Length: 107
Image 1 (spheres, one colour):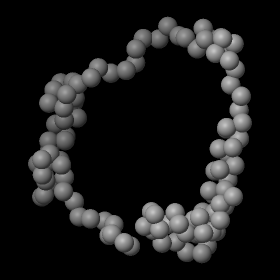
Image 2 (cartoon, one colour; image 1 turned 90 degrees about the vertical axis):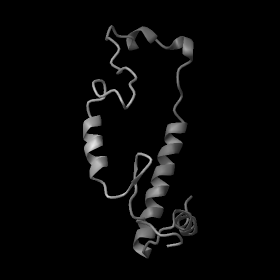
Image 3 (cartoon, one colour; image 1 turned 30 degrees about the horizontal axis):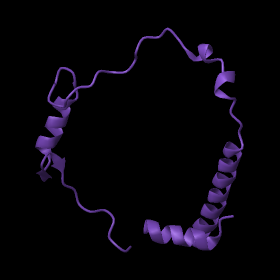
């Protein structure tokens, strides 16, 4: 069972503040999630030999894409947009966008 204290501890770890109403709602939601997890844990799977694997096999072709590097603009068509965006950024470092901190430490 999830208690209000458990939710308070989670909020401290997540560095968020919530109201009493939000705490009650989150307590209820987490309790429902844990109840569902218990239901899922109770499902009994058939033994490996009992499964009819052939019904899960299809004749579809491989739908996965080939591995490509970011420098290959033919294989990675969105790279041109990445370059446009990166060139428009006011502050970047080593290929990464530098942005303002949104969340403060200890809040």
